[in-house]
Length: 198
Image: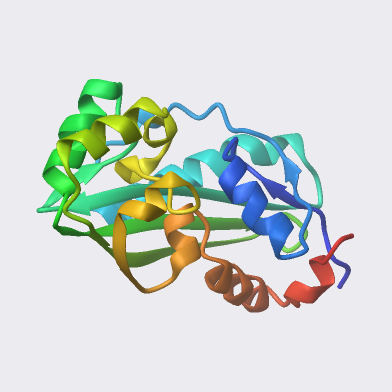
């Protein structure tokens, strides 16, 4: 079995960088999937449904490829949060998050067009947030970074200063669990090293 091209159905530069850092250069095809059509209070089911929607939207544009779709949300005190709508919402969110621990859920979907198989998985990582001040929250939101992130923080950016502890897969918090990707590829019969710098 040959190694098909890997297509990332995401506009996320963080997900692309994770793959590139691991020696995998994906084809990038942002999905225009309408996320508002999926409503679910269960974070695991929500992120998996959103990831499926993204991957399935992109898949028809490619043949004999592996399509990966991902989506992330933060669950905190039984509430589910995606990207904040604006700076005011981001500040309010951080005021709720500080000093608490949430769960970052990322849905992962691999559509293997060569074998006509689809795998759907969810990874969960616990994130303990620092008890940051209002001034720090406002300064962080003013950078614009948290406005583009599920959970309102970027672990690979300034947000790393405001995370006390991670329990679980850290790349999952960035938007793509690399260990889970390796496992999913193996389940489909691929060796992850075959995707290095193709």
